[in-house]
Image (cartoon, rainbow, N blue to C red; front, side, top):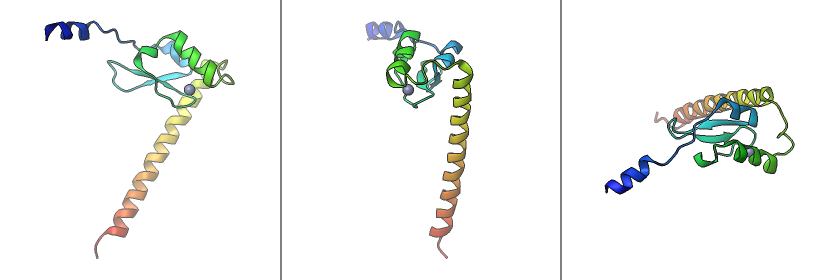
Length: 106
Ligand SMILES: [Zn+2]
């Protein structure tokens, strides 16, 4: 139906801005329709929440203790999160290969 296609084409997607990092957010998902990802609690918000007022409100209501931190704090936290994810992936791979060794028929 052409009307639905037109409506879908006009749905506005919000794009990530570097200034959101200073508000404690990175992004995840589809680059054409990114979702804001809270660096502090890991919560993924809807694309429609990718506006400064909603991002600030998230931290102010859920983690007011870090809401006043600067961009460097959030960059450091993001880097630590990525390192944790990398270590976790390596541990999972190691466990999977151990499982393979244990379950491998003689
Ligand atoms: Zn959060």
